[in-house]
Image (tube, rainbow, N blue to C red):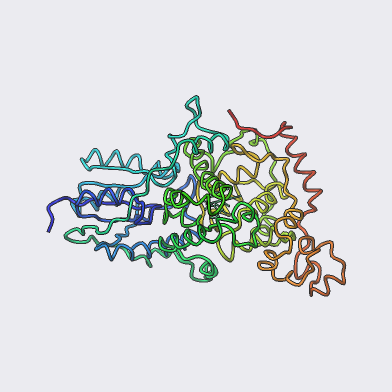
Length: 487
Ligand SMILES: Cc1cc2nc3c(=O)[nH]c(=O)nc-3n(C[C@H](O)[C@H](O)[C@H](O)COP(=O)(O)OP(=O)(O)OC[C@H]3O[C@@H](n4cnc5c(N)ncnc54)[C@H](O)[C@@H]3O)c2cc1C
């Protein structure tokens, strides 16, 4: 029996015990702790949780709930509007405080700010903590005190800022309240797909949960960091960390990852270490942009793109989503997305460029599709990267840098291993034609068991022709040079 009023720790995208500042601070109070997850209603803005991430969330919540048990605690699940849920739970449990780790997306902020004000007005202590990104989005600013719009100076500032806060250790014990409030049943939230179970392939490569995030980090640092810089762009190689979905759900903190890389420059090579940290810093940069420019997921950052003459074509879009464009590297990427809920970064760039520049379909359609299908869907990284590819974003790749899907395939998947894995109907095609099956002579196709246009589609567009149209559409917006920011 304890006399202190309980502290509610409201968990969101931070389903971890390690380096969870809100949970650690709550544990230090010595008060009983009620870990709470609220399944908030779907809303507009950056949009609802995608199907793939619902799958991840289900397993992540289950794993986190299990990890609380040895600490003498459990996870309380509630659904509904955050403010209503919290106020009811406070009444029921006489909790005196609510702690949480901050979120930086506009939807999250729009929920958290009024909740904080309402609870404080009711004399409830509210404390929020950092941890979702390496540095708070207001910490790194230009010399003029403004947000960064260009990545390299952002990285230089991040590098100069030194290490992020040291990670907080996982609490060893969490005091239980005198009585546990009723929890909803995870299964009743229906987060998993049933008929059909399109997520069955996700488990081939992913296991949601904090334990797996740490295992993956350790394996990456010991086996793959030393090749990271030279091999990270080759989708058939197992050369990247695959930590992004764990980061997206907060099963591991970026600060924990950063600190784990300290001192590895000698063994793994300085260039590899810096390259990996720079990628982590891209994630921070995306959040920096989203925090300071909250319209990032929905509006062209460079408003000269508002006049762009997009050509949405439902049939072409459907073929892109299904991996039936006739360009093997694009199709392999889109099918990897269906099967594994992820896509290699290099291929994301190629597939996104194809949608936006070859098919002239507005990047927002692609952003929404990725949001629904990626297990690592993230409001900041997804929006910023789509705008980067489209040329409409901050520090973006210029519009006229149009990826050639054949040459990109030949450069980054030279033997076609990646294509063969995800586009099995091309598996027997010679290396020479694996990225250009539409140029293969009839006897080569027949040896590979391919009937043109049947087993595998003809290209949706001719790339050279599509490129000309894309450049003309760009010129029609009055832009002639590299797209720059809208300041
Ligand atoms: C069109 C497009 C959409 C994308 N959408 C998302 C998304 O919704 N969620 C997401 O996490 N990433 C997104 N990315 C970025 C990137 O593709 C993934 O972060 C990366 O593929 C994850 O694999 P990894 O964990 O093995 O990365 P690693 O190479 O091991 O990199 C380590 C970590 O750095 C971060 N990172 C790496 N590259 C980027 C990047 N370009 N931008 C931001 N962070 C990066 C990730 O958190 C990643 O886990 C997108 C990229 C493109 C081109």
